[in-house]
Length: 317
Image 1 (cartoon, one colour):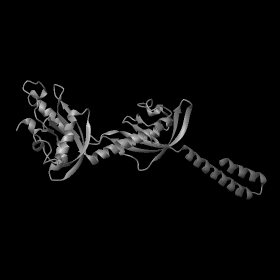
Image 2 (tube, one colour; image 1 turned 30 degrees about the vertical axis):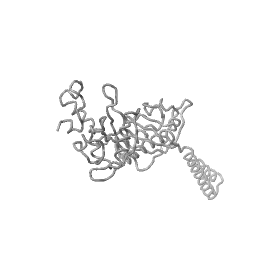
Image 3 (cartoon, rainbow, N blue to C red; image 1 turned 180 degrees about the vertical axis):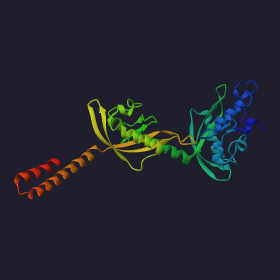
Image 4 (cartoon, rainbow, N blue to C red; image 1 turned 180 degrees about the horizontal axis):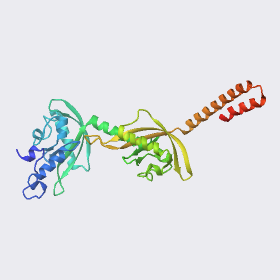
């Protein structure tokens, strides 16, 4: 068995066709390494429908190794039920004559007899003459694809339509992505804020914010939201605001060990409610002081002393 067959590929270049694969086994080894390093399952067919490529992710999903898959004529009888094989093959191979990529969903068979619903993206492979020479097909399990689509949809919704501020801060504590609500709260545009130090955006409270972000990068998110008082620099002057903030640490899903990409900072302006609470608390304190002053003054026999005691309590409030 040739080296290309063992790596899940076949050598399709003719003896007079130049290419990396003709320079010893290095080209085939590089192609096999690239295919096997992909996160998506990938297979390919020549113009006759014979399997020419099969990577490790395809083996993980279906259980069939490259040795078992490469060289087979289509999926019939092993990766697809015989009753469905003709339709599946026709839909896959139709990509040779169609522009762009085609998306389909199929039920494929695993080596142990199970069935897996996959979503495929297939497109034509062009030969050196520009004519279709086959089809490549990338596929993933539908539930994994749906999870990915949900994650992308959630990210887009947070960064476009959320009614609270969302800022993605990089590992250097500089904004990398800002949604429209956060940009308005910071008194700037969505692009002009990117990459700027937080100290250029906030006159006060930046130390507390940077301390919280540093803690999240090192230790993870705090157990509860925090309220931060900040002064925002605006063309009209500084605005003092209270932001109820939550944080999440962002790590790369592609690395074996967590690699910090930054922090997701989400905040909501609670200035009016906190100012209302402070004013109500101050009014309660003043009422209590006046009540205590009246009681203390009533115990004084000397009117001047009573006035002095009353004034002392009133000034404290």
